[in-house]
Amino acid sequence: MSAHAAINRGNRLLPWLARKILRAIGDPPIRLVLPDGTEVTASDGPPVAWLRVDDRSTLLRLVVNPDLNFGDAYAAGRIKVEGDLLEFLKAVYPAMSAASKSASSFRRAVIRPLRQMRCNTRRASRHNVHHHYDLSNDFYRLWLDDEMLYTCAYFPDPAMTLEQAQLAKMDLVCRKLWLKPGESVVEAGSGWGALALYMARHYGVTVKSFNISRRQVFYARERAKVEGLDDRVEFIDDDYRNISGRFDVFVSVGMLEHVGRRYYRQLGGVIDRCLAPDGRALMHSIGRDRPEDLSPWIKRRIFPGAYPPALSEMMDVVEPFGLSVLDVENLRLHYARTLQHWLKRFEAVVDTVRDMFDERFVRTWRLYLTGSIAAFTTGHLQLFQLLLARSGVNTVPWTRERLYRELASSLTAETWNRATY
Image (tube, rainbow, N blue to C red; front, top):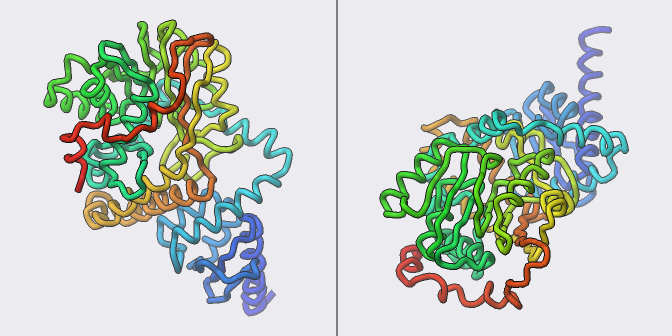
């Protein structure tokens, strides 16, 4: 075959490959622009964005594994989204979800369970946490709220600032657990310590908080000392599986996603052995409407070992140990709003982030934050809060009224004003 014929054959092959890619992701309303400028679309409607691929090798990698290689190519600048990145992802996610529902029975029966079996042992869990949460306290301080909360905020009023909404989230958690002065709380996964300190300061409880991010633990301990709460809040550098003792309350906010499906019953056993007979427990976790593996790119580049469970899977934590579900709430749209705040703040300091890391890091995190907004907005991801108690415990609130009374009644004016811009 002559060189000219080979080139022509290759040029005919590229549009065919492009159509295969679009079909694999559910034929969303986008146009794929090939290296020679040819535009390919599989949708009759107007495109929400154009996906420009710079070279043939990148196109081939998208054919082989679009879930992983799209993110890597975007981070490297080898593909570009022309148009609004959020609107592009909001169009792609539902199409991909519909396509995955029709995946082969082999993939549903074999591949997904094998992925879910990847271990989150004690050693692996510490490595996974270090990969993400130990990047740099200075980095997270650039764009998180004043309390350094890296979980879904709660917006009783959508116009709230992020600071106000994060305080509202912590207070909602405390009210759901109906904390009382003098009670003991154990927390699995403390972040930078804000919730543990809030519970001690505003509800008069003592807290033992377990975390395997050393940088976060060091930060939280220093903050407890400065605020004079180190006699009531203990931050422990240890795995949740080593929790011992009895407590009135167990709380976990943003930790279940990192436990791993294989270890849910082990977590349930920890709650069972540490919870007092009339105790309460709360789990706050990203989740899904049905069992489905997390994006390979997110698992490899952002959250290794992570898995957002369906509600049915969360029951493996609850049902074997005589625990009852008292309340379930889905704060999906609140997480979308939280992420919108984070992305806006991230973009405002992007030059500083680029100086701290590099351009690839900036593009990686822009895709992660924007993709997360799209995932929660389209229902690809959920945010569940489950309130638990032992079966037969009757000392529980009669109605939900206490949860949703005016927020100002449970936040001091000083705290509220400090959170107001």
